[in-house]
Amino acid sequence: MPIEELRRRSSTKWAKYPDDVLPLFVAETDFALAPAITRCLTEAVQRGDTGYTPPTTRLPDAFAAFAQRRFGWTVDPARVRTTCDVMMGIAELLRAVTSPGDRVIITTPVYPPFFAVNDESKTDVVAIPLSKHNDGWSLDLPSIEAAFAEGAKVMLLCNPHNPTGTVHSRETLAELARIAKRHGGWIVSDEIHAPLTLAGATFTPFLDAAPEAKEVGFAVTSASKAFNLAGLKCAFILTDAPEPARIVSAIPDEVEWRTSLFGVFANVAAFEEGDEWLDSLIARLELNRQLLVDLLAEHLPEARYMPGDAGYLAWVDLRELGWGDNPALKILREAKVAVHLGPLFGEQGRGHIRINFGTSPAILTEAVERIGALRG
View 1: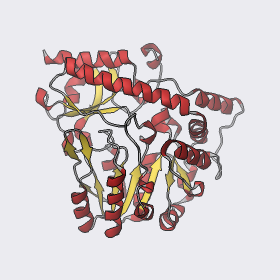
View 2 (view 1 turned 180 degrees about the vertical axis):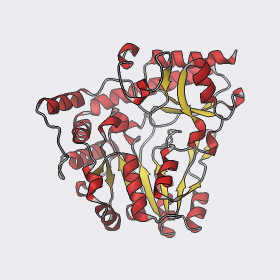
View 3 (view 1 turned 30 degrees about the vertical axis):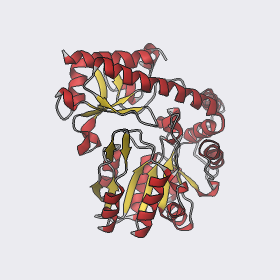
């Protein structure tokens, strides 16, 4: 979309900063909605369909069909329960399976709300850094097992991982499930970026990784990240075994009441009619990912970036530039580009930034050129 139209938007990405700032921070995209979503929301407004969300909707069946098509994953619609957003679902699950003071594993650098949700549940974070390799990142399974052995109750899994874009392998997830089962732990898997898995990678739903995963796992997801629906407030929790399903069914009904009816409409439209649009989005993101690689090589050769396998978020190491622990501050102040603050993702975020490349090539190019100009 042209930048003039984008600046008419009132969401956080385009409203937080003045018009001289290019916003590449929060995880919103700059593309037009999928036509099916526009149509279903327009029709709902026209018929005045703006009330409460009913207890039974088409969403579970719509997602089950989508999961089968896109991931080869068989989902039981009876074990899909809606809520307001992914982090609300995670917060409710933590409340259900922990007590204040229990320890919760997160793998840094990681989505900042993973820290905040532990503040909300009064649980203690055990931060285990991802292992970094020449070609990407992976879970540090020995350290995760040690944390469970020392009493951690839950691990918050980011699958695919935000901010690195890592798509965890089936083998890794299967071993993670076995570790959790050995130690009586739980895995809560945030899978909101799964529909954005790019070419060359294969997404494995945690619950489908191994028989043990069904017994120890919960998944929380939504169409919101892929289809840019965050403001419509609809996500859902999935289980695939009796005990996790019992835990989710015991969560207060109010959690389900918080689901937006418009969010349900949009998620159903996305899952039932959005495949062609999603495929075109993924193709655009693959081009933008390569464009970012080329732009960094030209304008910020000191930057270190390992392209991820999913999503539109780039984790970029700027430590060689000497711009301090939080280079996003200098970039905003001097280049008028808003990128996400690396230290918010954990100790491993010092000297890093997160760039959202889910935008037009023109905006992405200008943003990197502005940042590169700071090199002098």
